[in-house]
Image (cartoon, rainbow, N blue to C red; front, top):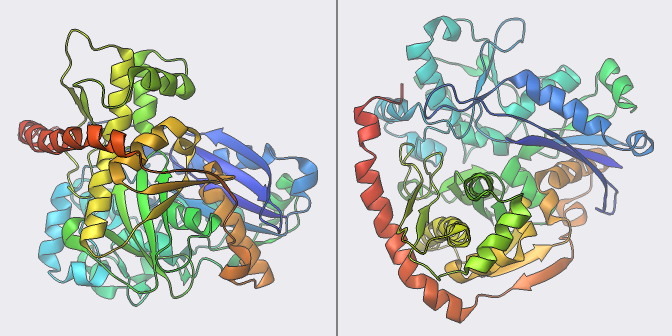
Length: 491
């Protein structure tokens, strides 16, 4: 048995997986996000650890006793700043925090070659710009920084006492030379840091340590090895066998991601495509990243008064895709691909006297699908061929949403058994590889397909003019919302 732990934004998920890849048990624990100012997004790192313990202890005791290794996955980019005592100096600044947009410009001005080193645009969600913001606005904190860890790696520190990170997660910091798969002295220096502030780097299927005595005793396990693991999307890809050139997935978690595995480093920063290391040796990946996906469903549940996400999807189906004039821009926390715009915010346009809850719900599902259509367009512009996407994440539970997405993207969607487990499954498989030495081909077998959704040509025809309106609406709303910057709502 192998334990996979995913440190998400809205909660921690822990799963125990058999050597066959079958999920034997799952446990979860919720997390909250603090937003003390507009555009900010923070969490207390100790809450990650508390939720991790709760999720693990929710698993059956007899299965925990049989665990042979642990793997970690987690939300990327979060700046966890530790002092000399290895305790957090402030709340972690998360991936969907938009305060450091000015710092992004400063960073690229300091290092004109930053895009060729990192393979990515400097975006506020990444870790390095956050440190420039801390330098300017919290210099007393910056002076005390001894180590910087990503969210899952802080949990690793609590589990093992060791500081370590994997290459897929670290590629999202803007401190990594992604082609070389090592820290970049140039990028670290641009933010006043050095290698001493960073943890050692490992491939995702390498062992970084073992459980501390007290943790093993608390969890009812032996002092088993802990694998390096991966960023949430790379680990999710491993979980469903997206490990070879051209394999692709769609993740519908809090954020939304189209992920394509590549056998070489192929950046396209000008179109806000992410190019990161995979969590397997000698592999990379491209991503289009959308900051809001299932988070829009959570918003929609509250806005429409639906009882839960299932009820919201029922409302949307009753409303009918492409039926009304409503257009929803899903930018609750800004947007990355292709806009790299942390300031734009969500909007509902085209409301009339006939607008009801069902039509609003349908517009929300369409809006997220249209954002992904923008993302797949820039991947295709970069020469990436995508015929099929394997679907993972909580949003995978809705077949109706899948019909809208398939039509908007003109791509086949393959739903895999256990796909909703997501990154935790991949983390467990990385642990299996670390302990047994199994290859990716042996360990990362794609789960059986539960069903496939083909693009509906008639629905695609109805959605096409709405997609054009969606794209025009972004430009209009982005211009209007420039007032946010003028009023200095973002510190």
